[in-house]
Length: 132
Image: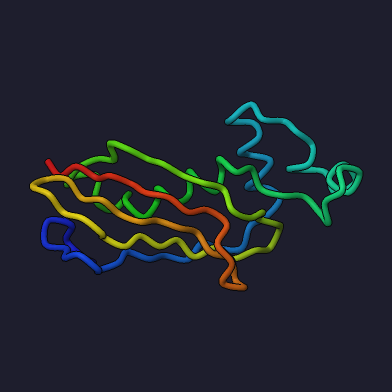
């Protein structure tokens, strides 16, 4: 595992999630209070013009922060700026990526993204991580 205090510009963090499943989205609906049926009921998603249910954008965004979970003792995220760029469907396999683009004192700025199994970006943005 990379030690964030020793990471250099251009180095990356990466992890792949298990395939998106309906139960993950049902649980997220309950915890977030977002009960829009396009996230859990196939027929409702199709009525909305979608090919099937889609994951909550914030579910995807929240998962992206998992890249930094192993480093909770080293510091914390101080800024998180995300743009949604694609939909996430059931059984999609997301790979989460963060590349260090700037390092100033204790502040690390990462370009982050989540890509699906077709290498299509579904979320892109920046995370600022402050070392302790």
